[in-house]
Image 1 (cartoon, rainbow over the protein chains, first blue to last red):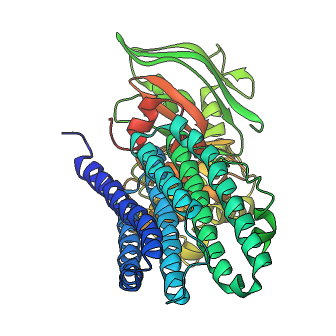
Image 2: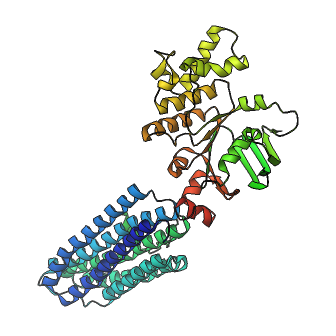
Image 3: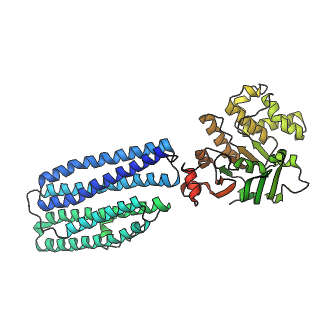
Length: 231
Length: 253
């Protein structure tokens, strides 16, 4: 028995809860794009409803974290773990909102066909999901190197985003009638691009957990993204 | 670090054959609060008592190394120990007022040392000390009351007033709040923050949160050694030594 067995058990449980939230969110991202691809309205409504579970999970994690702080007076490394869990749970919840947003767009497009077949968008989703899962894995293993490496992959997501953007512009130029439909898809891509950005934030928290240093990772160097972010 | 008050160089301390402090070098800044933490028996109280030679009264003790107060070795031959203890006052774990009036408790030191040349000056000195110890408002209407009739928290502040009355430069506190309730504890902590404007304060505490709340610098002692000494914020957020982290997170000790 260690001196703080109960505390250690509770701290572990808090991290496990966060990983459960992580897998809920990661599934939601893949699901949202699959649903859009299938044009599955029921699936979209179901995913929107399930976002409530993600939000509840996040609040539950917050509550447990605050109870640990109030009752156990964690210090140093322990306090950093709890602070990181609070922050990562927030990032995950927001990623869940992006997935919900994609499901909403599916409903908004309604019965109309997509302006173009989805090729790069599922790739973005797959990439973002893979980054998210490995970021959470880095947290579990306290792997600073992995956490530092993942944000570089954000560039791939950014360039896929730019590709989708350019492609949709050519559609719009060719047929202004598809502005609305193209805009919807652009928002889908935007949500996925933001997902990858939030994974970078999670990686920053992993480094903070291990070293206590607040670092900013990832060069946000996409020329396309700047004007969008300023809005 | 601001102005240095104490400089310790390779301090070793022995109770007969037992070495209680091992090769301690440390710089204690003036007008800041330095907290000493560590498990029972790690040497932190012994260390505190080295700073005003309170250990001298214990038979068989031996001190090696140097303890410089404002650059003067307090263990050098010819040092006036009474004057040293006036300059370096001490507040203990349990409040220990004399069984006398509140006034006489505070006036005790100045009377013995002849610090006041008239009754008026003594009255002024007592009032000033009680004010500095944040006790004046609670006792000013009845300075003749028995000190032992005060609450424990008030008694501890009275002891602080008594220490302040002889115009010290350093106040050593050996677990000054361990016998007090949470409110009295917070009052003493607030008081310490005011006092550090004028004095160098060194506090031994078992209460990690207290060390984190009040101190500017923290030293972690373990088995007679100073394991780590750094700014309090660093010690409690990202200590350099694993042993320190294990102790403050409750995994060692």
